[in-house]
Image 1 (cartoon, rainbow, N blue to C red):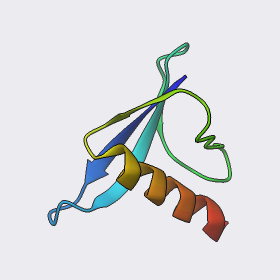
Image 2 (cartoon, rainbow, N blue to C red):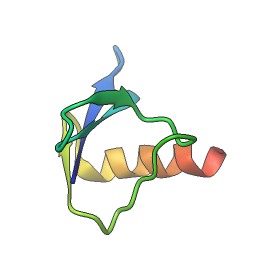
Image 3 (cartoon, one colour):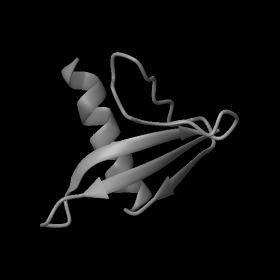
Image 4 (tube, rainbow, N blue to C red):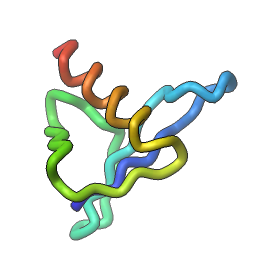
Length: 64
């Protein structure tokens, strides 16, 4: 299970999403070259609605 934490800009838009692996407790900014987002996996979403974070993650993953 991963925890996805949205970082918002001054206009309350998602500027970045931090990923925390609950097993290791390490946090890193989501990088589609290093991270794989699986929407079917149980995940936790903080600081923004789940739908907005999933949309942001999906868009970033498709660009690379």
